[in-house]
Image (cartoon, rainbow, N blue to C red; front, side, top):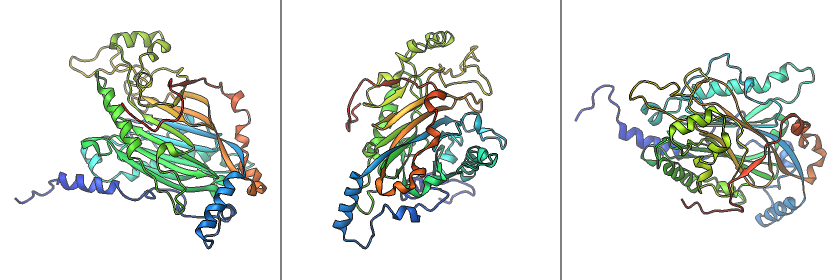
Length: 421
């Protein structure tokens, strides 16, 4: 049968989308080519002319001879609800501009309609967000006589509405190695990218980092949390990175030294809507958190979250501080009880959280959530001549400037590679 003009061949689009999602892990946007090697980096990399046995021996010996340095890491997640940012949007309102590494995760940078889910990624929206980030991070540099280091994007990757953008101080750029990405679609048919994750990994000096930006299944009905648990299991089982030429790079998320999980996890509060709203009105966060699905569940064993001392981040009326459904809307209109959908959690030694809070931008029905960490990084002693690069003056006063948040461990201790629901 002849196809009508303008008719969309959905099966073909679906097949193409799935195939495109399997492209190589170096398929991302950055200010520098991912295989660029600088002169400084050669100091800590054995010659490729050496036999493979000598290469392995050299790497192992170097790993034993390291110092530990600390860097300040800013992490943020924000579901922007398909709303395009204004050109004059001031991101300094919710981005701390005194860190060394920035990881910004977004969800729904485009509306999750069929043409966006099945079609090509809208690179213009991605570029717009990155342009705003660049302006915010480098604004102080242009206004400062001493000209502190500027920031460059080392990875920016989009999958439908999910975007993760990683930025680093320019003088640390020579010591970034093996950046790569891994996308997992958990949405339509269990494989399309309207829900899922975009994970970024890289090695800074001798320490591997992995950041997982997620958007899990929505829904506030009883049992919907099982879909979110299933999404998490899929993300951990299907996310995979290349091992590298020496087969010494971590492949799975949990194999990395420092791991941070961020995004719109969509977990709700397991209480009647009226009860939830009344407890939100009196800011009874501790009572509400006892019924928080993320803390109730058993899918994230061994992960940590800072103390949640801010109001639920979802769902707000447009351009308002009023939660959706307050006052009651029209008959038959969907209601969404307030919930802490947007979270940042982490796993592994060598990470200390100093700040965990939310921003107050009214761009969407979610509020952004931010965290600031100090991360321990192993640095080769053979590079101690570059000491000024390694010790961050941005760490000075971190604890005094911000109130250090306590940590809520999710009950379980130890490393677990089993993700049984």
